[in-house]
Length: 567
Image (cartoon, rainbow, N blue to C red; front, side):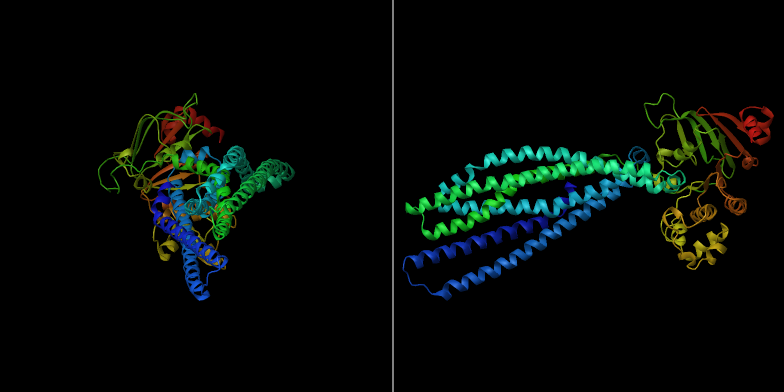
């Protein structure tokens, strides 16, 4: 974020230059009027045109400077916000998968929207106003010092009190802002859960329960917001009260100095005008600490995202060499893994296996034994603990991470579709895919005929998470996506687990078609679907408990045979 501010610093510099120039023009114009007033009061003859022409020139220059100041300030704000949002977006998508496990969606969304908006307000309003106020106070103070230094002493004598009050209020506001952001996180989480779980909510009549939970969070949020408003209002009132005191004192002192002959009547008038320009900026500078601290809360929350280490980019291998040696597709040796280091038992505890090229391999086992975790580690979504992982003969750390992931296509029972068209959802399997390639992939996935029956065809919007399609239709679109990616290794997570008989048959045909010539790894819940697998690994306690094909495992009468008997 600091880099974004520095990168666009030239626009900020222009903003400062035009602000200084504008204030100097105002001071010179004010000085010109003061001199004219002194001449008139002194009985001197004065040509009005000789006074008016310079004043018009100054007005024109001041108007141009004000315009350029506004343009440069707005451009600086827009460019910084653009760079910060772009930088945050690039960083966020490269964070390790574990970060999204630990942080709720509501919290991340709040930071990306509310906290970014607050940070945007800092660059668009708070920072420019602060700089302008500092420039106005500095240039005006220099002018007043030249006029009478004692006026400045009187002016600034009352502000230590204002500074102390503002500091106390800003600390309280920052604390409330922190709690307010936490309540916003919680509110977004509840709303997100209610939307995502709307089917369950309606089925189990949870409307009132969810409503009460959301209302309770909103009430706490409103309570904190009201506290913040009360304190901000108190600060505004105190600012106006405290600002009034120096005004009265300065006016009286300026009148006294005029009566003593130390300054002229024209200078007193000029002082009065400049005092009006300097008092509000001084108060704004002092009380700006409140807004800066509130923006600091958002900055800290966004910085927490920036402070997260990105997942590794990987090593030097960027392409898969399709050699014809006997190297296995995947080799694991004593791999260990824990989602949380505080867990007493690792999810994977010294797991070892080999998956040969072109073979179909299945992983079976009870729920929670680590089968899905194997898939996540294969794709590099998590970093394993101990052990070795070799992909096509090379250590996984030698691979560029994107290149390693390009070796895998996944078809899961939990299909995710983007809220875009069918064509776009299929095409994301391959960069710059042509329409003909998309159609061919859909033909292979047994979904082409259905798509043509839709009024919009391939341009049909699937809705959020594909809600406008049935489970079987979503599944076949995900298979088409995998067809288009054409990766050498196919990961299948029981793709026919939650569909009707007709859809299952079409999906099974598509799966048989896509598995030809590929290394296939299957997570099986229904053991009847893996009878033809070349090798079956039975996972138990985070280890491989049994290995063999269907017939061999049935003969052993072990875990696999027992699971198969239970159906």
